[in-house]
Image 1 (cartoon, rainbow, N blue to C red):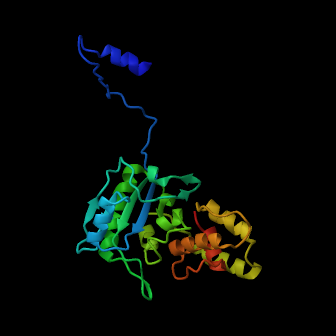
Image 2 (cartoon, rainbow, N blue to C red):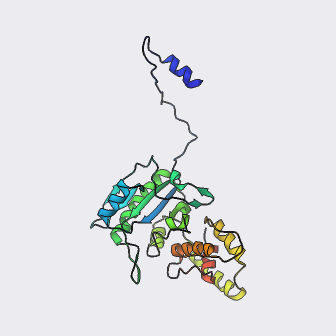
Image 3 (cartoon, helix red, strand yellow):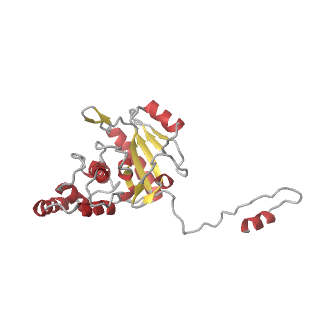
Length: 252
């Protein structure tokens, strides 16, 4: 009814309705639609990655190439939804495509004998990009995440070779209090690990969509593996152990 009244007031004599919008007053109660940054690897070279992300049924806001120096492509405007997260959840929120910025990094991912490293130049470029994005959208540290963090049952990118600690040292993303880990680990080694249900609840409180079954099933192991790839990449077998639990407890 309000819009109808506006249109009626803007109707030119003998002509069609004309909508005029006054934007001189802006509400103070607002914020960015963007609450998350999701990082990916492409598992393809730069030309193929550009083709996939610009012409197929998947996209990201940004692509960082493996050229020297790396080039940053913006493929989707930040005001629009990119199709990069898929079925996902973080801290109970789903449909992360609607509230995230997706960043793809050209990297082959798993290779024979291990995982392909990211170049220093790629990471430095990524840091510059993320500082800008995080500052403009006021994104919380815990919401700078891996694709594997938000979709642990089906994704493993950007993989254990991705240097999350290096980003954290520049103030990007969440990291654990390393000064607490040795003592917490010793406590678990002395007392034993808690029941699986307690471990699942700890993972849930850390943001991960985790089964609450009390059973160390394959789905729970995948969540543990995603957590380990992010915070303890030297060993990411999906097995609960004293160090993994200590790191989990030392998260802010």
